[in-house]
Image (cartoon, rainbow, N blue to C red; front, top):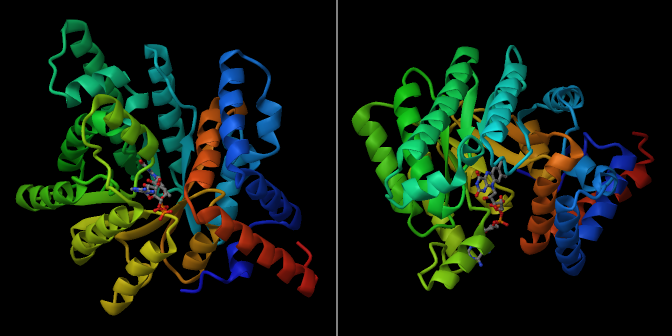
Length: 391
Ligand SMILES: Cc1cc2nc3c(=O)[nH]c(=O)nc-3n(C[C@H](O)[C@H](O)[C@H](O)COP(=O)(O)OP(=O)(O)OC[C@H]3O[C@@H](n4cnc5c(N)ncnc54)[C@H](O)[C@@H]3O)c2cc1C
């Protein structure tokens, strides 16, 4: 694999899109600007101030497909032409009311319906806490019993999830379940395991997410693999490092309890590698969906596949990156025939601002990635100038 091939990496981008990406990554490389800017933006959002315009022409264009399904589908087809598949997500977050949860359900079903008849959209996704009250996931995970009205709300959430999975099965689209904060994850795991047992018989339809920055996840993976073998179902695993590190550590510190997160980035990396070592030899019964922007993690998988004579397009191994990030990984993998799926969020600018802020924050706090993005974008701009390539 050659991730340095910028011609391949930025095939989708016009010259002006490339310059916009350069400008944007330069901005978000500035920690102070992003920290202050995020706080101001969230505050302005709460006050209902008109800030969408600032986002629309900057981060939105870089990290989102569009405001409506029509623009997003166009992008999905452009990606598919370059052998990169997609999974779309209506990225409005923080639905707290019953009406909001019904809205999330409607949007998940709508997104699923675009996948119908489109080989370009082999997956879809949901976040369990967007379909039910966060507090109930927390209670359930802590083993606290529900009262009558809570039981009814929990039941409504389970029915929403079941509706999504039934529709996914009908359309033959795989369903990813996102992983969230550790204090709600036990309840999500229980639901995901139940769904895999129910749906993953003839094919692997349901994929759970395992966050390897958690110290306990390697033993959880072992448990999951054994359970699937014993009960005769297949498992789909989205393997990620984990996105809530600051929140997790802060909560543990405030409560005076040990953090569930590995003590260092190195320890997370070791855990992630150990997860891959566990899954890869079992790729016949376990579908791997690696969600990562780490070149070394991706290379570990491609090298393993090569050493074990698995074809690049092996049907149970998927690579995934977020739209607007790590294109050098996605497009170079795709041009070598690997199965690549971009996470493609869409939605009205105002509603996806929290998602956009997280992307900007992630790009400052995750050391190493932004300088790498900047370096590659500059390299491609120079290459095009030298070649006088017209895009
Ligand atoms: C397609 C896709 C789907 C995703 N879905 C989810 C999801 O459902 N749930 C979720 O939580 N995240 C999800 N993520 C985000 C993911 O968990 C990571 O936060 C992000 O991808 C960065 O990790 P990396 O492997 O790409 O890169 P790297 O740069 O190699 O790793 C950065 C990650 O390492 C870990 N880390 C950094 N510093 C430390 C430290 N000091 N101690 C311990 N660990 C540390 C953190 O997890 C950090 O995010 C997804 C990512 C992708 C690409």
